[in-house]
Length: 274
Length: 250
Ligand SMILES: Nc1ncnc2c1ncn2[C@@H]1O[C@H](COP(=O)(O)OP(=O)(O)OP(=O)(O)O)[C@@H](O)[C@H]1O
Ligand SMILES: [Mg+2]
Image (cartoon, rainbow over all chains, first blue to last red):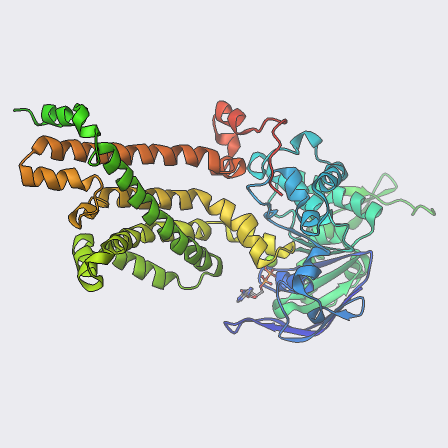
């Protein structure tokens, strides 16, 4: 469990990026922080591994205040995946994945064997092990980034717009992979995005943020859709329009669903009792 | 009278290569001063350059100092040093002048090599739990190597060209035949020595070109082609490492 307690962050230049933020992030679930650019998502995420230190308030991981944990040690037990993959350009795929275990003193052969397994886990062909990041596609680089994040088998995985720089098809593929991985691994995932569709797809808990990281609403995707807390949330999730605004239409005695753009979305059927 | 013929006559005369004033001795002295000055210069400039590059602090000072050092009149400086320090210390004075010449390009190469690294790579290295030392040694130094080598190359060429100064304080080197040539009005000897210096410079330059090939990690080279898919197929194949090479990188 990760707990933010009245956290604020003012940067040296005076920017108040986070203003009195409180949130409980449950273990073994995916929590998605979603909001428009500059609202403080990355700042919040990087407080968890102390890449940013809070100006005030307390941040606890399983009851332990992070400010009492040495940053390097803390970072080595938390996976971190970022938008540009952040791979080391002078190291091969396999050595990139093995980086943190090697820092922790795992013998090379063992770290590499584990790295190969992780390549399977994230759906990367082992034949790519000896390539350099510059020789991979964007989607492949992201997979390497995820594998590196998982290399120390961390309890917590931080993901900052990890799929932001790939095309929609690869993006959908990576999202499905992440869902599958999460079913298998059950990590505490904190995921940052500005794409509400991605947030609803991946999040067990979705936190919608406004400027200064003030929480506009939090809850499960269903809760938020059913009951947007404000006009801001309603407009942010697009509740009144497009493919979220579904209405019923009767055709030949059957009820079908049509979205806000007039496109057919599906049929209304009885819920599966299972 | 052909100057070049005279020069070659001097270079090829067996007598020029014998005894205590043999050309070989002069080349040896010249290379010794060059190597010593570059080594001392590197020992000073590389750590300082890396410190500046890693912390991002002190860059303006370094640029200023390096620029000023570049503009120094080495000839005048040498006589100044010898006058201050005394004729007995003319050896160290000469080396000091050459070191001052070597430092600016090496310093610039060292910090620029670190400066050009994508900030996101450094940030990622820190975020996965590298200490500042590990970031420096495992990320910044290898990635900064190409520019550092460029700086060393530039510094070495500067020094090898300027080491003729040693002859003016009676320390030999390839400047000596030039000084002698002036005194004897032996222009063939002057030109011959000048050609030797040029040859030496070209040789050292070639040496650095080789070093550039072997010392730079493969991924750094692969990374130079920012998008391999747009590179020619052959280039891409060349950048693809064979599966058998086992390289120490972690
Ligand atoms: N190191 C810094 N120094 C000063 N201000 C900063 C710094 N980092 C972030 N900020 C500011 O803090 C605010 C929040 O930034 P943050 O990066 O957390 O936003 P974000 O929600 O991640 O945005 P995006 O979706 O664009 O990544 C912004 O106004 C930003 O300009
Ligand atoms: Mg961000």
